[in-house]
Length: 377
Image (cartoon, rainbow, N blue to C red; front, side):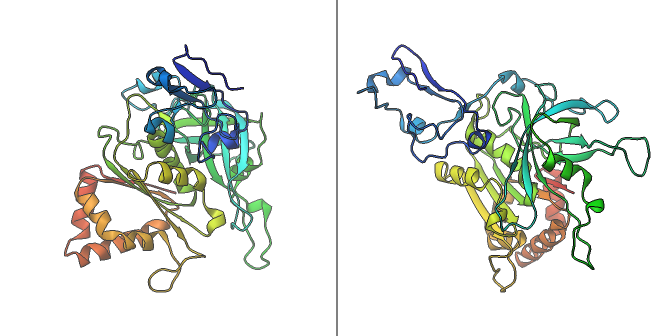
């Protein structure tokens, strides 16, 4: 139910129970207070606009408020720490969290299955955007009978406030690792990925042992809110960027008002394999001057030479612009399977040479300036 009184300083719309709606933020292009299909908490300051209430069905807001409402988050104490939390829980004493939801992210024509998994940590395992959790799947390590499985690291795909904006959950983006016998072409469950299958098969209420958080290389530098961030991902490597972008464009964070440029390059097999596409497309619509989004669909698009379109081909397409942005201090991030890096490095080297620059020198300078961030697995 939506309530509005003139005496109230703000209008608060309660969060709906449907996580998928909550995750995709505002689905409707126009706000309609009688339509419950958008679910995040939305607080609109009406103090200055109370004179705009012409009738009970019309609410006038400033252009900014009307076009791009942001979600209120809590607890704001999560902004207070000067250093990121690190290794609060270690493999010998992991934290037992609870699965909130597991949702398939990809369409029927995607090769393989990728899931969005929301985990309730009760606010006890705080993290910053760009960090990872370790997950210890149940069962014993086949190489060390009697011992638990080794920890598997997963980049966190949510902001520190989580998908319910209350600081109590974290989300993971997990591709189910399935092994097919090269001779028979049939799946061999004995060789499937233990942890990814455990996560994708888990049900709400299941317990999960987590460690961490860990990692500093992919933390979002926030000292300059007007900086440029070029984010390059293949597949589930998009996870940390989802956290960055929600912090930049979705959440109302008092001490971080992003006014720079975020540019996402995402490489996947086909349209059905796109991850969080609706969310990213909304930012493109709402913040056309602050967000760019380029997709490389290897099985649907061709590069300039007629071959498959990989993420490095998209980078080459915009290489002049990218190099100029890097020269002006832009941060560049790479996340995904480690096989992505050789092709990207070769492309960047070739472009640098065409520009009469030494790639080795340029890379060394980028690393020295802390503009170069890589997390591959």
